[in-house]
Image (cartoon, rainbow, N blue to C red; front, side):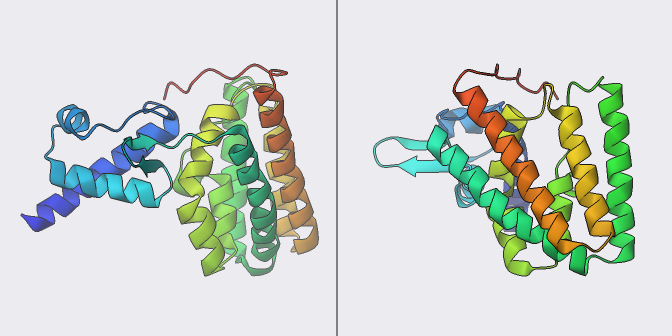
Length: 228
């Protein structure tokens, strides 16, 4: 019974995490245990374990007399997250240029080629990446071969970052530009130029942050929510 509960908690955790990232469970929404148990058709035990793990992943917050809610970052907190990404992912890109194997770099180049076909199919209006191995940023962090960076960016912050990338930065006129920037970073990594890879990654994330800032101030419209 215990093993079944653990397996069910894993399944519910993965499903809820995806729904939070893609906005089906919106930022700030209340995580009512009775309602969620009915929604997923499960008992409270596996649900509570899933909620605990979501809280550890910074996707759910608990407050006294309020209960659990989907995380909702203020504008300042969101921008702070981008500043943190700029520094850490820049470092990851530098290390990736130094440490990725030739095979890993070839896989990264294949990934960019797939993304180019995807953006072309979407007429340059969207650039949505699946999580994990198909996510460019995830692959760079993994390619750094630095355990601490991976813990910070691929575990602690990864899904929180994805949540806001999905809801703020996956569609609109910047999509083709973001793809070109990714390709330039991959070229620098393939050339084993760690300094250039870091500069390009920092510049890329800075441009994304500036776009988010313009959306927050109303200079740019907020993109429609993802439908897949």
